[in-house]
Each structure stands twice: as structure tokens, then as C-alpha cells.
Figure 1 (cartoon, rainbow, N blue to C red):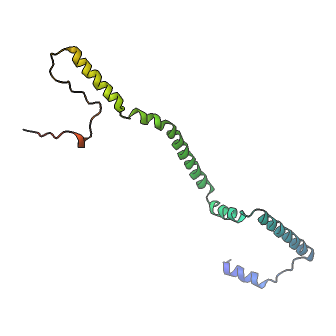
Figure 2: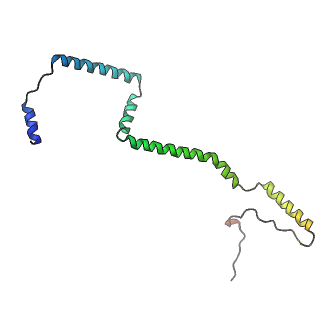
Figure 3: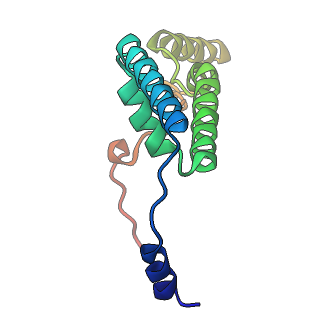
Length: 142
């Protein structure tokens, strides 16, 4: 049987009337449902927002749950890394100027104690390598 044939057969059949007692019961129930829905909307002003949000999220709830889990994981890792960040940064800070001055004074004292066998002041070893822009200009000769 063809789809068009089926529709034609349905159009030829006369419509039956719903029994009067069923009709009254159906309309009364529908009226009560509409009243309950209006009350709910009045009580919850954000229900339209919730219904819109639900309509957006409902087609793929598993995908949205997975996305939420990924964001929770990212925030957890981010907050756990923040607690350790200051300790890591403190390890690589250059020594304060006071420490550098004290080390140079100790080196001078050591040179003086070793005697006059060495002339001039000993060069202080560099504590940290200088950036390339601050290194002395050196020429290479072949």
C-alpha cells in the first residue's frame, strides 16, 4: 500500500466525535494543568531561562557533562599548580646585593691573608652568567 493511498483512505473516513464525558474530563484536566503552569512561572521568574537552557543542553547531555568534567580538571590542575609556584620561583631568584657584597669582602680578606705573593686584587668569580647583551665585546682572531 502506497503512502498516498493510505492518506486518501483516511480522508474518506468520517471523523468520530469524542464522547461528551471524555471531552469534559480532558478539557478540565488541561485547564488545571495550565493554571499550575502559570503559577509555576509566576513563582520562578527564571523558569524561561531554565527552559531555554534546558532546550540548548538537552540534545547532547553526555557531551556537556564531558565538557564540564574537562573544565573541572583544568581548574583543579591550575589551583594545585598555584600553591607550588612561589617555591619554584624562589629557587631561581638571583642573590640579593648584600650577599654579593659580603662574598666579595670575604674574597678580598682571603687574598690579604694569603700574602703579598699575588699582586693586585683578585677578580671575583661571576655568580651568575651575564646576558649576551652585557658580555664584553670579544674579537676572534684566526
